[in-house]
Image 1 (spheres, one colour):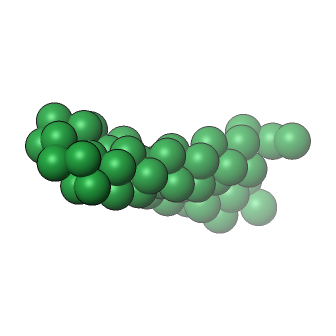
Image 2 (tube, one colour; image 1 turned 45 degrees about the horizontal axis):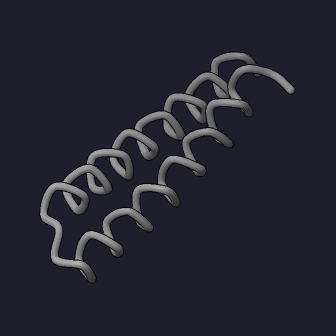
Image 3 (cartoon, one colour; image 1 turned 45 degrees about the vertical axis):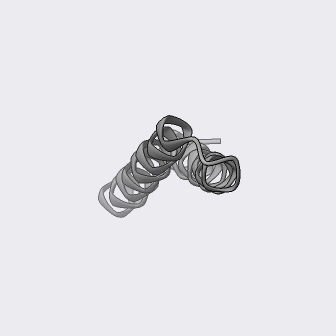
Length: 59
């Protein structure tokens, strides 16, 4: 698997993990966990986009 695909997969994983953390933080009323989830979700989106951009330039 090339680097761009790896970045896309890892980005998707971090997005999902972040959404779960955000939801759990919301349910248990833990603002810190909710914020961590939002941060991880955002970083996952960024990593996913980096993978997509790398794929375009490597083609």
